[in-house]
Picture 1: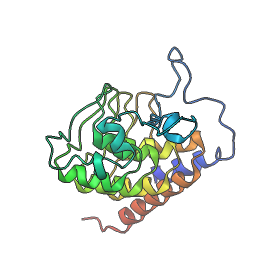
Picture 2 (picture 1 turned 45 degrees about the horizontal axis):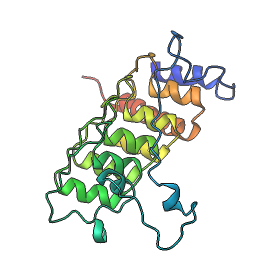
Picture 3 (picture 1 turned 180 degrees about the vertical axis):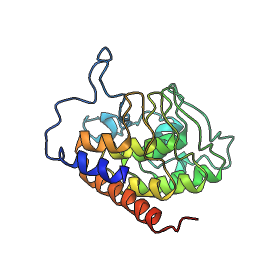
Picture 4 (picture 1 turned 30 degrees about the horizontal axis):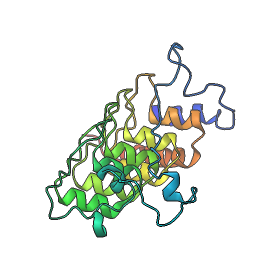
Length: 229
């Protein structure tokens, strides 16, 4: 009954505009701990065609991480297969090629990296990992793939935010569903003492909120139908 009361109580505020920014400055003791992942722009102006060139364009050399993020790590002249390629090499932020591919939605690259031994639990300097990046960016198929390779569903970043919280914050309902199906704990709180449901209410992430509510109600129904000994 506790969950049901919680849902009804918070439902009153669904249409109330949020007056607090989840990204208030660090001195505010009531601020959200949440800092959503923002993908790095890996395409240069030259690659986008924004710069006119004279003669043949010479594209700048790209790192394996950028190639992974663009889905070109295993294509043509960029293909690293058959080389001494390290699937777990890190960049200056401790991001691996798997983390880049996951954050930018490159499913085929993710699958190949996992088969090459990419470590699914590697973390960046802020505690983010491939699952968190995929969840934050809304790539449900990659979330499922990482979970199949035993990614830790309830992993947290440096602010205590789970992959579920990242998915909810950005209203990625399909990712929320994948994580809940895998047993993600929606009662975990981050450093601002917010649960995934709290974040859904604050951000008005209604699609993600609906998935959470349905999951909670299903758990309640299962609990009420279980005979007591």
